Image 1 (cartoon, one colour):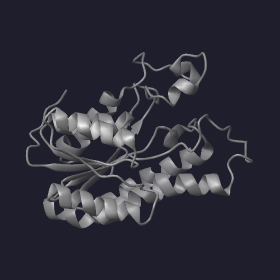
Image 2: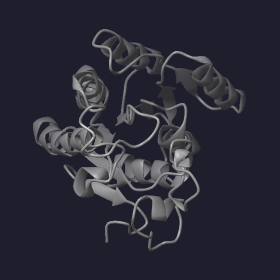
Image 3: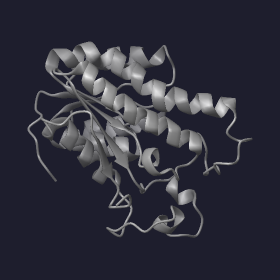
Length: 253
């Protein structure tokens, strides 16, 4: 694992109580940063923050729904106030909107409500957080990392709508990189297969087979794999902006 000296640095990570987000939280804390962990206001967020704080880390809870136009900016403002500023924003919160994949031609299940849910959380949510954090990030010369998906490039995600929202976030990453330069860098990771509860809902098949293609590195990615990639783009890749890094074990090779 790469190590960066992030003492005195402050990060807000959305969707940080589990999965890729928690992997990112742990990566930033390992390097000495103070972290505001965002997720929905529930027992899971409280438990994660209490455990990390109990281990001596500088961590605070920032509950709120990025899909809510009032909660999202208020949450960002709360996090910035609690941390005393902001150096890194990780737009990781997102939703597949479904417990199981939906076939592309299943238009009945991909109705207007489904579209609105995914666009609101996966696309407008990062916009809300970035807009609310932009001034603080400009002041510190900070960085933003978005979590998109290889589904943005190759399809095969949980639904066609999911693929479309993640492709939109790739585009926003490029546009924000131009808009916020030179003070703020903006990049994204595109995860491949994720070792997560959602993937376990595919019954009776190997993860790689479930997605229709073997992974050259022979395994699914872990939250640590993805969290470390986010850390690299935020703290290490100081001459990189507007890029999306595929972190997929070679799945898209």
